Image 1 (tube, rainbow, N blue to C red):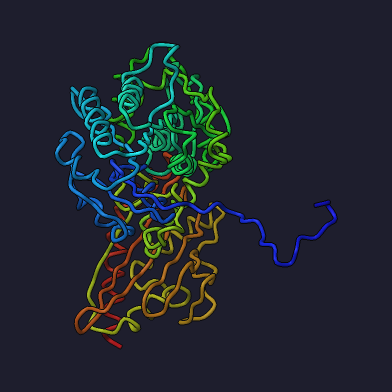
Image 2 (cartoon, helix red, strand yellow; image 1 turned 90 degrees about the horizontal axis):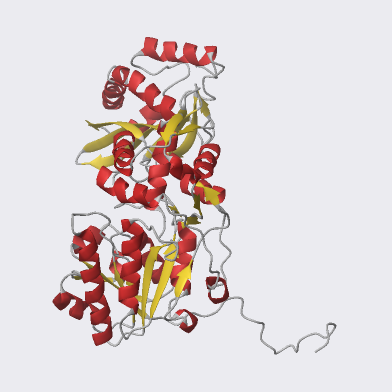
Length: 505
């Protein structure tokens, strides 16, 4: 057909996407960081998914729980593995001990051997494993990376074709490597670091990792292959820290490199200034001396994916921090509408951005509408009904530092709409009779909100008041701790007074 010819009227248009054939897929490690997100992707594509977990209840809170089968099993127990593999076609192996105990490397080898043998007995067609980047030929791999490579070799030594993907630092809220980076950069404006800050690394966004993991599923070209995956750019760890500070709106960090700082001391320091446990930080720090850069680009021919760069990956990981622990936020998102870079309910306690909260809960013998109306009438000429002098001082301080202070008042004494100003707050969300959330526009080293949510309870209403603060850097944390003592004179009395006012009317 020439370039000027029109296709026949009854000729179907080319499909824009390739139809995916549903597979029966087993996921080992579904309770982990990548596993939870991968299951969501697999379910979204229509695959039949079975998860194996030592403690199945850990998956009960997942929003995809009723769409998958969860069986009790342990990769160290061949009997439970045999039952888990029954009827499956393909299996993902996302298990790694990473320093759980003294013999963790031997445990990983034993677990991989059990998994390999169970897959062979069940007649599976593929094993997919996520390991770590690192050049075996260069030698000197850390125990952590060497163990990941050993596991890959064990899985590939059986009769079932194995596909091993190797990645470096995974950028996404909840990733141990990313959380270590996040907390170090946010807490320390000045850092003393070993020489490893000059080591080159090729970070990859978590959504791209998932794209590759799903892309090699039932992909014959990937069978028996060890494939390296990475993001769009190569940086040093120092440049990655600079990138994080830039995207997070922090001042460029001062990094002083010293010739001698042992991995043990480094991991203890990480455990002290970040919430990452020292026993988890140690193997991660050990691995920082190894250059982890993609050298084999074979994956590009198998999976048509264009990875994003580090700054964009960090931006996506941070985009949801403002809603962390705020009602009607990421925890209420639909299954397939949430970015994999966001935190999930059962991520570790150290995952996600730091958010400080003051939560008050009171009961009012009044209707939800009456209680919410009291909250919706705060500010302006009415004021804040408790601690008036403290609010005035805070408003004066804000004005001195160039903020709006308390002088803006409000548009209407009792009515609100999203976008309205209330003194130095702005209405971010308002559902009469249910929820009101105000976002602070005062000058603070971070982001702040106050919200009220009401729910019917018996003959009255339960009012939950939540003041939240997401700090920016060290000064943000110092600010919260400096004002926290005054909260007891404001927030608890405020919630009680709102309930009393509603009852009196």
